[in-house]
Image (cartoon, rainbow, N blue to C red):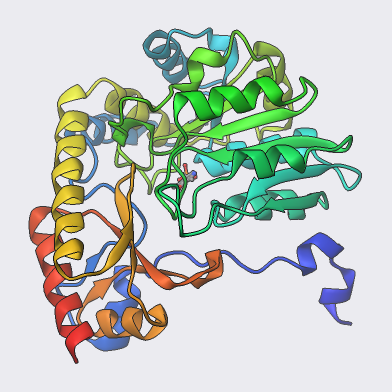
Length: 371
Ligand SMILES: *Cc1c(COP(=O)(O)O)cnc(C)c1O
């Protein structure tokens, strides 16, 4: 029996998601220590100390199921975001929410649209359901918008069977973002029976003045779903918690397919506390802004192109096959992310670290590129 033949066609065509290499794995392979990981866009400052304290005090309750409705966290989010409690859907990471969207709205008879070089989870959730994945060509490298979503190309793919459009703003792994005018102009064009998912995983990091807060469009566009996460700027990637904000009607449907206890009790309390630790968030965003600028300048000095990034990572064109560069950096104890699987075989995605980590990365890159 070949299990491959039993799997649905969409699943057979999937390639497994390749995560950033864990530090422990490289330690085992090379027998070295002092490794730095700049491969998964994690917060180099770690979690908020307030979140850690909340986890400590919640430990003795671990025999109890979590609050399946996530009432406390949703109340806090609703207050902070100025939306109704009934508009929020909590997920085990925002990836979970993306999957809920696919499960609730996609089927083998329908299709989803997303961009070339877009976040890898969109094809996974689309094809796992057996729906058709329509991939729009991205802008090419020749314009200022290099490698970013081409919204006109995406609009042209809309057909009668389109149910969902996934847009990452900013996008991972390119770091490109769509401004208020571009995204606003696109939303007007999308038929109201097509859902638009705007994935704002890096929302807290973005400082560009023309970057739109998609939540402000929710009243105008009932077909809009905005997703965010505690994995990036809030530094809680290991706990897995994210959320969607939408109309109450869409949230009701997403909550029907959601597993009753999809967000664990430690994640619930940690996210609640992290949300009110403005100081930690501010330090995180500042560190990132400085690091991004520093790394960009360093690349310019070396004559290396990079994609201007609105997130907490920089995607560098190493002007040669990136795989051997990635491997050599591993031997230097620096884990970054090769992104050939995103159609960018000459690029490496590097998360902005602490000042010291950025310097370590740069020194390692210099050694690797000059050898
Ligand atoms: C990191 C990331 C996410 C977050 O995933 P979680 O499941 O919340 O950890 C979502 N979208 C994009 C584009 C990302 O880069």
